[in-house]
Length: 114
Image (spheres, helix red, strand yellow):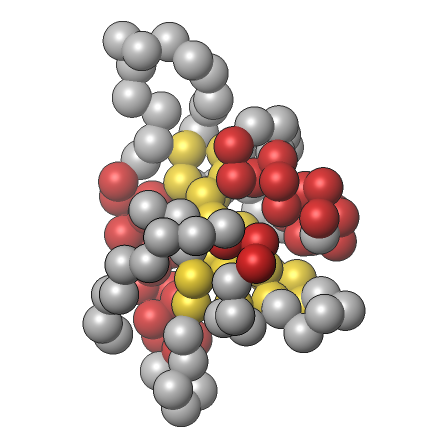
């Protein structure tokens, strides 16, 4: 799968699929996750109902035709600049799961924040 970098508002993208990172604490309280929680409440309820384990991906189809993928990419959250919250292994695991899923769909394009 190729990566194409674009600038713009993720919530206004034309892509049908949106992938973003979440923490494993049941909180979508800041950043892109907070925006998705507000615009797509079912993405949040699906996230809460899923397994909050690093590398897991849940998804929720939306009334506007979008599908939101929630990738559990960090165990905890915070603003301590001396800590690294993201798990790069979790991102790799989640992307592999998405790639496996996408391999069965022709011409799938997934938008995600950089």
